[in-house]
Length: 220
View 1: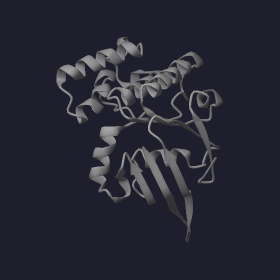
View 2: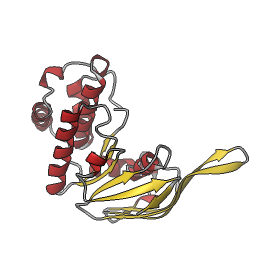
View 3: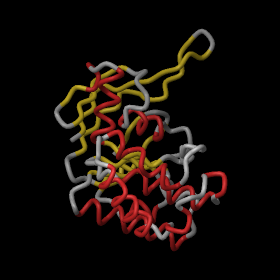
C-alpha cells in the first residue's frame, strides 16, 4: 500500500539546514499494522504527517495504493487523502464550532455520503464509543480523554483503507486505551492498514511489526 524511497525533509537553521527526515525508505503492505517508536524529536510524527499528505514540503518518492503522491498537485493529494486516509491526531484537531456529532459528519460529507447514511453512521459510531450523551456538546465542553475518543471515532467513521494514528491513547485512561487498541486490532483484522506512532510498548504489542526512528533516520 505504501512505498517510500529516499524521503527527506529539512527546515532552515541559521545558514544551514536541520534535517527532520533523512533518507527514509519504507514499504507497508496492505493489511499491515506497523508501529513507529523512538524518542521525542526522532521524526515519527513528521513522517506520519507526510504519509497522511498533511505535509507536502519534502523530497523523495512516495507511492500510495499505486499512485505517485510526489507527482501530485496539492489539490489531488488532498482528494486522495480524503478517500483513503483516517488520521488520529495527538492534539485532537476537532473543529471547535461544531458539536461532537457534527465533527463526526465531516469526513462523510467529503465523500458524498447521503444524509440518511451519514445519520446512521454517526448514530452507530456514537454508540460504539459510548459517547451518545456527548453528541450535542462542543469540544471545549469535553475532557481531554473525551476529545481523544471523538478524534478516534472521526478517523474511522468513513472506513478508511489506511489509518494513521499519532499517540492515539495518550490522553486516555488504561481501560479506554485498551478498548481503542482492541478496536484497532479488529479493524486491522478486517483489512485496514494501520501505522501508529507511540511511546507505549503495550500499544506496540497490538501491531504486527515495529520500526524505530532516531534523529530522522528510520531503523529496523
